[in-house]
Length: 456
Ligand code: CAO
Image (cartoon, rainbow, N blue to C red; front, side, top):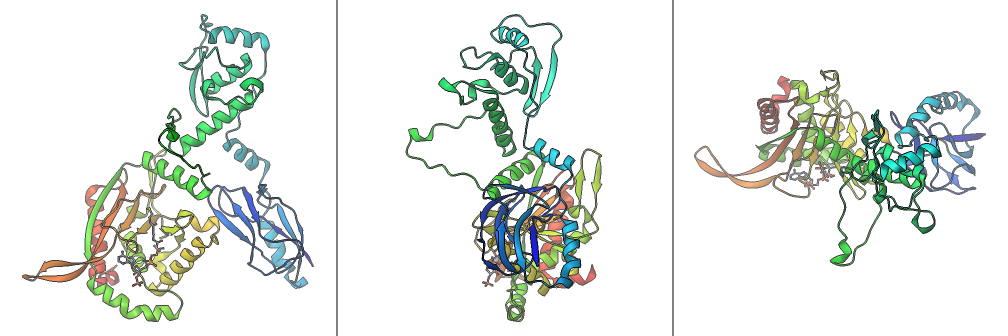
């Protein structure tokens, strides 16, 4: 039977994904769950798996195309039997194309600006204003995507009489608050068009999202030696935007502590082979997931989010923990859901599965959403301590560095103990210093005395 492979709902608020590469050709035989397209959405890069096995009959998308949720991507002569039709129908229903309103919202998000009516006579007047002539009475403030400008008032960069642009283009630049002198003219003799002004505005918004101030100008590095430029991939762009937004909006405090993990390391080594038989290693991260899940229940504010606009704290009754995974495309934070309900073995297997998927581009964007807290373990690499940035809308993150053998003065003598350095970064708007210290101390004590977990 002929079956359509559509772009499924990949995550909340994602209505489109770009086709980066087509991994199959017409005539290819594909297996169910084998990767057919390499795709990128606003939230992640992922390989789209086929939801059926069969022969590829037609490829309905091109490289570089933005596909909408529900759009048909491939036509496959499926090996599924007719009886499978019911679930297929259901799946189709779950992957309806977005409503017109949603589409409009995503276009708006791209930073499109509305066309301004062209009135040459009025534009002439404006040009006079821009070149320094007295302005008209009745000034009005206009808010745009790139800032606020006072209509009728030439800003520091609004005049620029020697810039090759028509009055209407200058007016557009002035209204949306961009410096027309920074626009690259695509017309003859470098003449600047409306599209050039809009492109500059989009670039300004994008660089602000990634944390750059719109006015910052990079130096010309080639003065000091040769340079190479490389386009940022999706993961880097998202990381840049998210990290600077988190850093700028969250007043961070960093708390440090150390835990004696000598005993738990003996336990880990002893029981790891049992876990390995089931397919994963028993590592510090899995143990920390177990302990942190209990700590989040005991200290619910660490599992909360702030709703500043409504002046509310949102406490969540579920414990979803993100784990920072280092991949060759950069940092990804897949989420282990309901971590408190899972055994150490389940957590180890799931962690191994998510980290492998993240590294092999097999994670769907949904797997990166819904985390309440995060753990970032750099101990496998090294380092004595670090201060991870809290991921919005979380209020805290646990940083784990490398456990090392140290002489520790205990019971009247120095003894070799395995000490694990931990750091807790938290949002001081939600969490007080004493609560931060208590939470981290409890995690340290639970690592030293896992017996504590059964009290909670
Ligand atoms: N101290 C000492 N040894 C550690 C350790 C620590 N804190 N953490 C891990 N190890 C050990 C493991 O036990 C394992 O040892 P064995 O080979 O003897 O069993 C070895 O280091 C390798 O561990 P791993 O890294 O494969 O597994 P893990 O579960 O500990 O970590 C993961 C999994 C996904 C967290 C890790 O691979 C990773 O990607 N870490 C980087 C996270 C990151 O980039 N953070 C920065 C984000 S910015 O906030």
